[in-house]
Amino acid sequence: MTRFLLRRLAILLPTLLFVSIIIFGLQQLLPGDPAIAMAGEERDPQAIAEVRAKYNLDKPIWVQYGLWIGGILQGDFGESIRIQLPVSQLLLEKLPVTIELALLSMLIALAIGLPAGVISALHNGRWPDYVANVIGLWGLSTPNFWLGIMMILLFSVHLGWLPASGYVSPTEDLWANLQAMIMPAFVLGTGIAAVFMRHTRSAMLQVMASDYIRTARAKGLYERVVIGKHAFRNAAVPVITLGALEFGQLLSGAVLTEQIFSIPGFGKLIVDAVFNRDYAVVQGVVLCTATAYILLNLLADIAYFLVNPRLRT
Picture 1: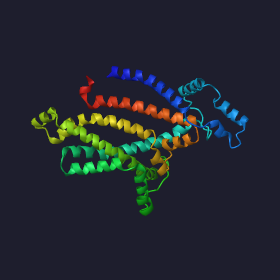
Picture 2 (picture 1 turned 90 degrees about the vertical axis):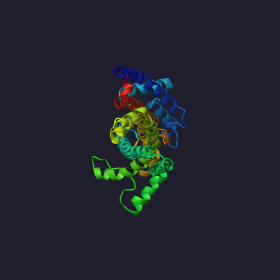
Picture 3 (picture 1 turned 180 degrees about the vertical axis):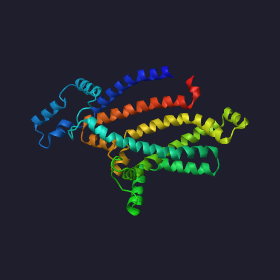
Picture 4 (picture 1 turned 30 degrees about the horizontal axis):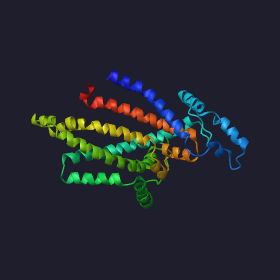
């Protein structure tokens, strides 16, 4: 396992370097000129030249990339053109919000998707299987923006139980924070739960037909031991991969959900940055997201070894 981790870590840095080149290169293809946008409606040539010089936009692309990646290695992601604040400060402000939303969404998804998938597989072809499949298809086919609007109408407008939008830091008021986050977390979690349910069901059906499951039952083991220790543990391997990818997607920012509920996370940040041609913010958010994906895949590989001992050989 140690050799495997060292090998993966050796690949990690070149991968991040390649990703940074792609991010910076594709950023240059976006239409519009941030210097002209910052210069105002008069578009004074002198003001445009000053903006270009301040943000190194007048230098060649390879020089701009070198300055950018050099600053990142020192913890400097540049400065936002629109609000004149360090990008690292914006990332530190928005990242905890996105992480909290992602964690709550994953907890809801796991709490619904995994039991539903196991129950569906154990009752294959019977009514619990049909009910779980209908719920799963509903979760996959329901748009997040529609479900979010319906939940706001029901729980905020008609019942008045939860706030319609906004965000409260958990350090200020934990209960108010949970009230504000439960609806967007449920909207995101139900869609992921449906994916978890389908994959868990498929993996469990395949594992339950294996020879070692029949052997375990023939030895007289309790059914809960057969399902929990032997079946689910082996079926969890593909689910771990799915969980890592879905969590990485949540960390990249749930744009529509954050817009509907006015959650100040990565999704809202990157949408505002793209509309305002704020290149430094877009680059910082995308690079953080790509890094999170790579690290989550590494953690998923580590989890394989912990869940399935056969993979250690």
